[in-house]
Length: 154
Image 1 (cartoon, rainbow, N blue to C red):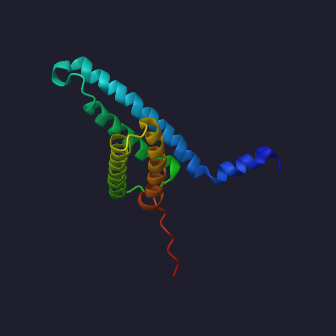
Image 2 (cartoon, rainbow, N blue to C red):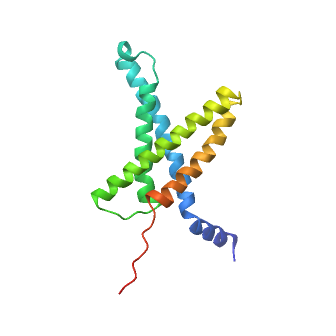
């Protein structure tokens, strides 16, 4: 077997994880672009209202990134075929709640490890992201976009 065939088999076997990581990279890009765009717009067009407060831009960025991630994960990563509006809304709600939970974990983890124990922020952010990526993947795979088992025919 040629190395090309082995690589191809590995990619096919691990398509879901590879696609999840790729979508995550694009989601990060969406997050950064929308953060800086929103920050620019808020400070450019309403400086007297907000000044240089980054929280509104961060909220816009989070919403855009999570929305993109939901659609991309549903369609490309987990290939979820549910078409009912009620199913979409249920999955979206679960996805946002899960992302809020992991956001809470991120805030708590960084607060404890950096603010209380004094560890390096960059190092703790990297470690925390490993947990977040794994947690988000498992929550999405086994709770939000889990495959329905086929019912046996009678």
